[in-house]
Length: 290
Image 1 (cartoon, rainbow, N blue to C red):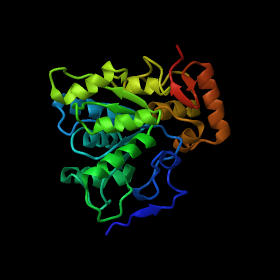
Image 2 (cartoon, helix red, strand yellow):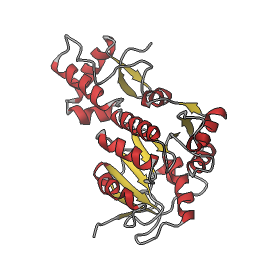
Image 3 (tube, helix red, strand yellow):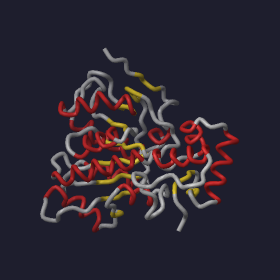
């Protein structure tokens, strides 16, 4: 049987402890990401349109490729698709469950749940064996909101549980974004209303990264741009690390490149002076600030 860890109260992430209904117990299967990595929730309908699934997968894939931790609730539909998108990108994803970690619900998410601990973690307040009861998911949603910097609603009907997460996010001062959908579809009525009421409108991962300050508008397309000419081996190595891994701070770049810190600092300084990279908050990204 798989061994699950139970975190002590001091080990529980601060974002989950410092909320009106704090998390007192947290069961973990996998590894929590470094606390400095940005985390964004991607949530929505359990019965999305094919287009909604494509948008959720592309959004999560792009965020994960940029070094953002993709968080969701493992539900069928948008949640499961978001987790899969992050996994397909080789990124990190976190799933909050409304049951014990050994009771995967729904059954259709079992394969995804089995893969997540290799690239992130399954998390639950509930002890192994606890069944998925309706009010567990309502309580679970507050943790999804608390653990993230913001939430993206891809498709949500007027009564979607995703809107509970949105409400909790707003209470906690987190960002709320939504992707526009077909106004004739019931499954997009809730998310379209969020846009009407002032939620940020996002069309792709870049929009979210820009909102987070992790990307510059119209920045580098990592899939099509070659290493700039004239770079030293160390500079090219750093440039590729930013191309492949997205926005990264000094600590993360040191781990990715394995360069001596003095070499890394010299490479970053030259790349920034040459306009190949830009410092955004505490992270470096490809491209010149406009």
